[in-house]
Length: 333
Image (tube, rainbow, N blue to C red; front, side, top):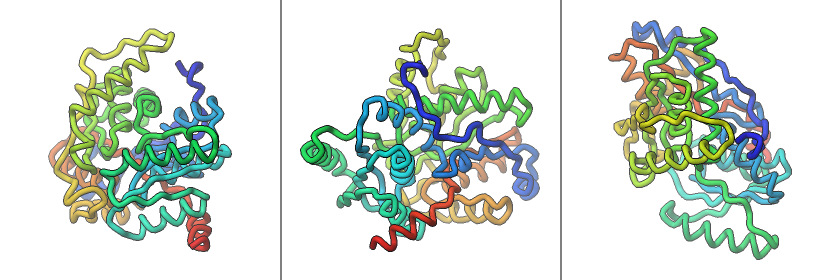
């Protein structure tokens, strides 16, 4: 399957696992761990780069010149696509919708401008299908060929293969003694490709670890039926390879959605997320944000008070330095 798809090598893998010793002391817990996907790339890390290895690999095979994707004004996915696409000589167009304003959102918007991303601002995320279709047609007319559509969050079965591999990567780290098998892994649940891919990868590795996916977007997008449909499509893609794969009988049996931490909605801060972001920063010098990882960290913190088995927080937020792109974007205006 890998030979057919020819994914690129964009990420620095495996990403490290470390013990959260000061958080452990604060909670009286002896088994808290961090998966440092924030270090997955010095250009732009986080969880998106694993997906982009497959998505941009196909784009290069098909010799496309322009990428089209979508997200909120401060989308990490859009910035990851823009920067990694730029490194491959690909232009990125982003259709972006409003989200609550904050410094992180403004920095990402500036960085996208600095990287040469074309931003198409729309009034509501519910209008995305119309504007995506319109932009596809406009780019086709202007450039003579369709751009490659990269789904929101990179969440397609093809992109999610990156997190199937991530599940196998974690299993290898457990075998190597870098951490015990976690009782649960916590990560944000947006478009779902990260959670679904990881859950299937862990099942394929024979682990009993649960994936607790902390919902950060509307139920219309993030819900159990959509996850099941996604997992079935991902399983079909895996089964299409030449290698025999023993797919699990119950896809997603190890995947649970945690709904209680979204607050008023996507991009809105919550007191629990603010507290978790501050705790991770003050105690462990781990930088999170309030849209995705802060809410997942709040759930991790709350569950650690009642679950004494080993727990793993998967840091999906890039820690790469984007100041160069921000400065260029601010100069751009």
